[in-house]
Amino acid sequence: MKLFSILVFCFLTSCLLEAKNMTQSSDQASPLPKQVKRVFGSSPPMTYLLYALNPDKMIGLNFKAKNPNNSADKEFVGERFLSLPVIGSFHGGGNDINLESLMAYKPQLILVWQDDMRMQIVEREIIKTNIPTLFVEFREIEDMPKAFIKAGEAIGEKERGQRLAEFIQKSIDEVREATAKLKPVRYYYAEGIDGLSTECDQSFHVQALNFAGGENVHKCQQKGVLGLEKITFETLLNYDPEVIVVQNRAVYNDILLDPLWGRLSAVKNKRIYLVPTAPFNWLDRPPSFMRALGIEWLASVFHPEAHTIDLNDRIKAFYELFFNVHLNDEQIKNILRTSL
Image (cartoon, rainbow, N blue to C red):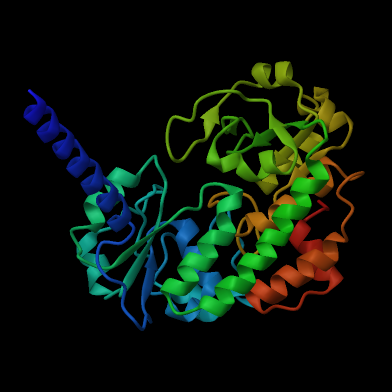
């Protein structure tokens, strides 16, 4: 009996060690190449992460560069980015990846968004390509600095990755300190063509809004990666949020002019804000590194009395570092889209 117990213990120990090794090795399917020149981001967050590190190493996009959620004009991202082929994504959006097509572009490395909702599917498919793969955590706001350091080292952009990480960490620390002891502002996140699509309170789509001192009025469990939960206007009236954050310009205009929406406290108090999208969405769709600037903007509109940074200066510094673009105040006004 004692011998049997020892054998069982050894077997379990072996299994645990094997599981640990599998977890460690799952970070990449095979050894990373020493000189990386051709990289593919398997999802939009990874594609934009790669763009910030070195756009010249990108081989393709997940969806069209210019789309309803992003204003990727050439003044910000250049002609090469806009001309990159659409290879597809593992994370929804209507452009599923064809593995044969992906391999035809000969990527040396694939960056994968380590998203629990799709990880098993992504791993099962990518392993078929035998292409070196790096899994990067990027769901939480706090994950972003580590993601830049990790990905930067992998693609030979260690110094730049560190610089970008430090900038993002500074924004995170500032917003956290400014909002830590404040009562959250009750917000509604208006999406879709009628403003009645939204996100659950703990969805990764609203990470930036929650982090910046907001509390989502819509409490539910996210059903899928895309989110976009439908509600009725009666439900929204019952929520009566303090602030409305809007993704769509047409919906934003409708909210300001529609007497029905005018019954809401947020509209009466003129606390409706349109999400900036140049060159990429500041909050979501996809949830990219732009969230580092998005949380600064949100904290300023949610808690203007507490988060008192010079937002224009911060925007200028961000665009200079991440896009090598020098903005003037008029350009910032256009980016923030504050007028009809």
